[in-house]
Image 1 (cartoon, rainbow over the protein chains, first blue to last red):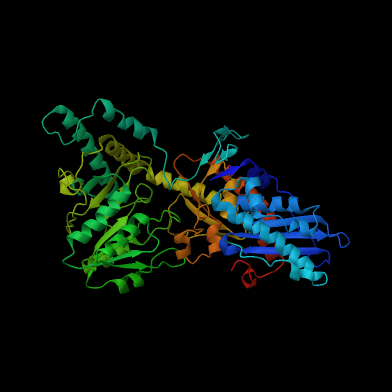
Image 2: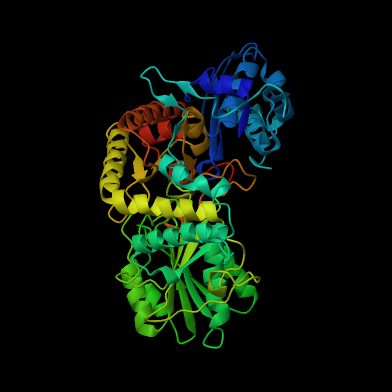
Length: 141
Length: 422
């Protein structure tokens, strides 16, 4: 298996590893994947209630190097975006940025799902406006 | 692939403590050749290049002499006679010849074959092919420790059973099946017992008479010999076993395996066996010592680490362990200067973990996070210490990254979680 330099970099120096308080009103948590399938991602966002800007993001991932890199990259990308902007992030952009081979595309899909799940969770906590957000799609394609 | 791709492992380099990297610890896949084996082989490429089947000149005689010395050495290692050793291209061919050869020869007697689910693909796929030709195959399950249950075996035997094929040592988890007892059960019922002893010969004592073995596959490159050469032991007496050839031609190897002999390879296999006969007692102690050191250094510093397969009946150089809450491929990535194998096949599109570990009842999650360490003749204590340190550091780092480890530490029962992907 070969990995791109960017995957190796995220694997060796993952960004934004950690956890936020999932009971906090400002925090949305997404947990996607399954242990049996070989990857589980937890992605959390802390959203400014006034501006809807994602001020902080943390992740933890059980999975291969590409899964770790995809979720690490996802936290970098969502930070500073509004939730609506973050929802525009597509798995194909992650594939491109990390030069993921075809067998690793599911890692990027999972990362996109994790972003959506975290936003969904945050919206649900805040006035139940979550119905505008597409629910988590199937983790694997 | 784009241009900015790095291949793992990287080129050879030296660790701060003087260890050469990468470290090879995948000796069940193949072994490096012993320099003494190479030295023995070299004359048979240029000077003694003759065809061992050429009977009327000295070139042929010299080659034949090399082959016959090798035959004696192999026979000696496993307690056989020289006429019972047939040379092949390797263990895959030996398995094919044994199983197809017996099936064909004894088809009047019966059509039932018994094997086990943890066999090598060379055995399983051969059996599957025979099923297409009308043979009936029973695939025995294994117990949690990786061993077949002798009562299961007894129950599976019927009056149509002609062959039992069960490996001596497993290539993934290194467990040693109870061959002596399996052989005895077969002998009592007049059933032929074949064992794929690829991983066992040269590593643990093998005696075809004491262990009631009728047909046995042997490979050179798993015991510090060259690739592309192997042997099949076929019993001549008590009982005499006959096999039909699968390759037709000049009638070499008493008609069982036609084709000009790979003389240098055979000489190498012979020398590898001679070294094993001489050095096995000392070497197996050395390997078991290294293996246990590796196990203790890893398990002493990490929780939730599980050994796959029994430690009691096992190859001295094998350690197969699962690290809960980390994923196999990322673990291998973290120890990319160490050559080992993973039970995870998640680099393939199927995402299917090892069928051997699954047969033991290991969950998919633990099967994905397993590593096979195969220690060999040339591994050192310093290498073992380096490997243990790297594994422990990497697992700790990945667990810090793992949401599953975090949840487990918070007391969440992971089995009760409703996962999105299910």
